[in-house]
Amino acid sequence: MKIINSPDEMREFVRTTKACGKSIALVPTMGALHEGHLSLVDAARKCADVVVVSVFVNPTQFGPNEDFEKYPRQFDEDAAKCEARGADVVFAPAAADIYSKDFSTYVNEEQISGYLCGRTRPKHFRGVTTVVTILFNIVKPDIAVFGEKDAQQVSVIERMVRDLFMDVKIVRAPIVRDENGLALSSRNRYLDKLERIGAARVHNALEAGKKLAESGCDNIDRIKALVINTVANAKTRVIYAEVVDAETSLPVQSYERGKCRISIAVWYGQTRLIDNIRI
Ligand code: PAF
Image (cartoon, rainbow, N blue to C red):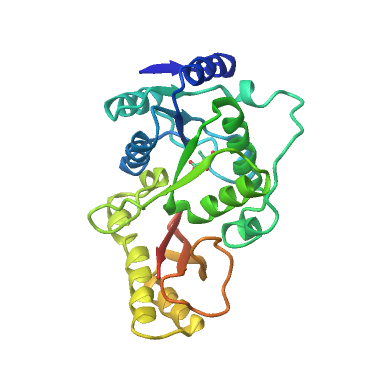
């Protein structure tokens, strides 16, 4: 497996790979890789000849009071995991090689990004769409794989790819959960042992909402109320719990079986968790 840091070297690798007629799948990550990321590598392997995993903690998607500084960084471990899982390249550029000092060009999706996480993280999706565009321009993937734990992120990226005629196929990969149901996330390492067990209530609340919907309840307010009541405890502060369109992540007026998703974000102690379930 190759480790490439320089964007120019990455572009050269892409040129020679494409000249051989090989397809490329990209798995964009911010590192601190866990089984959820590695399942994306597995999905990528099935779709293309060459798998590139990018590891880049993207400064522009963090707000001023967010966890950019403390975000876990463990490059050697990440590279070893990628190699063991059959990735061909880890692309890990330095921030200064992606964002020049006078960087001034951003990509902005202006509808989906305003809801859910976008309400409390105003420039977050602008940072995501910008860096994903940069990665697409450097790696020129035929396919890019994203996890459905960040379902709104995938919706925003799908919209960007459609609107800007980007020549890449977006593949969604399912959420991976721990034995208690907690969705795997790099931020779970901020939870202590007890919090990790307790945080499984986020998934339990989603399951309760799904059960209510599937029992025939199409009242969105009742579904939301049940989710919020089920997740509630002394440690939890709900940021949002919404029923949205499963593909676009936009709010829906009525529940249509199989076409919706309950999306939730909570503070669990000091840790911000997001999760969702298709209903
Ligand atoms: O999902 C993530 O880890 C990040 O938002 C992404 C897509 C790698 C962009 O920085």
